[in-house]
Length: 465
Image (cartoon, rainbow, N blue to C red):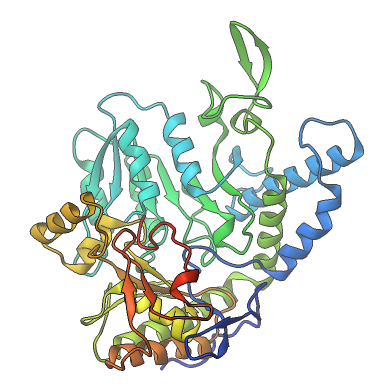
């Protein structure tokens, strides 16, 4: 095991909660799903509570509360620019557009870049669906392949950039949400710029763990992954990219003049933020930025690396467990794995119902990448596809992901490793589990108590994405 340098002394709102387990005990809930969403930092929740009495319309009211709310919203925008390494007064004239999340930011950018038929976007098979699907709507995509271990090199990206026709954009992740791998993003950006290709970086996974790539042309991230779960994300890019043409969303607040047959759009970034802004989300995001800045990147990165080593080495050492992804020079505290002869959905269900541990399972909204990591053949993939088209999701391929954050400790990683080790050893479950055909998820067969079959609320599959 790596030395214990993993406790930053940070605790999140809700971490004191006890959750019921099948043996009748209540255990402290252990969230190892930071890669999907994080809890709120206490200072973030407190800042939101302090702001709520002052909540009012932004950019619309003359009253003092509206003026105050508008100022708070604009301070959040300034904080986002500084967090992205583009503070006001610098050489670059960038804007920060506050939106719902990274997915909306990518869709927003795909619309605003005004692609022409035949334009090419270079992206990679490592991407989250949010950085794959929007580009396919507006352009042709050229993919950078990965190794069986889940990596690609700068040379691989260069080969895709140099192919004809020359691309209009490179869209690449700053860190994988599946394996936690951090590509050599600065060198990749430099290679693209050497060829006159602008770069968008999906920083949703990167933002809570590493400094932003300041040389990227465009960057986006989400507050809900960095301890501000109040529904705000950010798209940062050059003002000139948003100065002409109609915005992604049309409506109030985005205009200077409207007649029945004419509209005069206002200046960016307000041009890109039609409707009433999410000032609560903006206030929360600014507070999270302030808190992470106070902790400091040196401490955050050291914490991440210690946790990543403990988590990944521990999983790799467990008999019957296969850790996905290898050959990483830099990796976030993420461990994605499969257990021999145990469906991924059942592993996740048992971790929750028997141990009080929350993880994610499935394909993590990155199907092409995960299929490669699992090494599935085309024939196997076709069989899974046919079953899903019939409405049967029981055999959807996938894995289990444990992803840590600022508050995770070495002892909590060990708690996960002990639980996974028990499941992988073949230790029988205390009750049988039933799998739902429609969702693919498992639920313990219990007659009474909080895990009773009668009390289950059916929803969308945990494995979808």
